[in-house]
Length: 113
Image 1 (cartoon, rainbow, N blue to C red):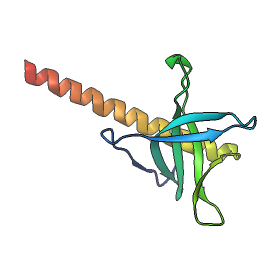
Image 2 (tube, one colour):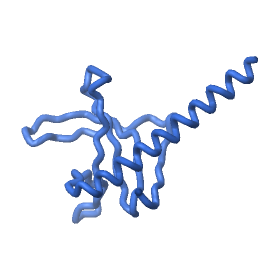
Image 3 (cartoon, rainbow, N blue to C red):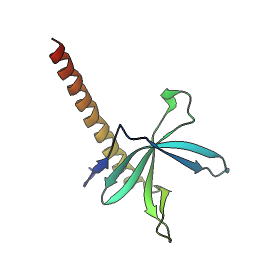
């Protein structure tokens, strides 16, 4: 189970667009939808902008590190256990948001009655 999970999330703010270059030199645009803190490290949750079929849309999780100049860089998570902890934290947060949204919908329906 992931420990020390925090997140920053603002649905009203403009989502940040990030361009990543793959190993073939092709650029891909992603939207930064979430930053999670798991085990004292920050992770970026990105959604690809160039996916036409929403069924195929899958979040990309990258660790936020600092380079030698102190600039933030996104790094692929190579450790499977680390990736699993972050993915689990992300799924737990999504489940919590779904419950909160369901509660808001129920409250709205109660008010209309």
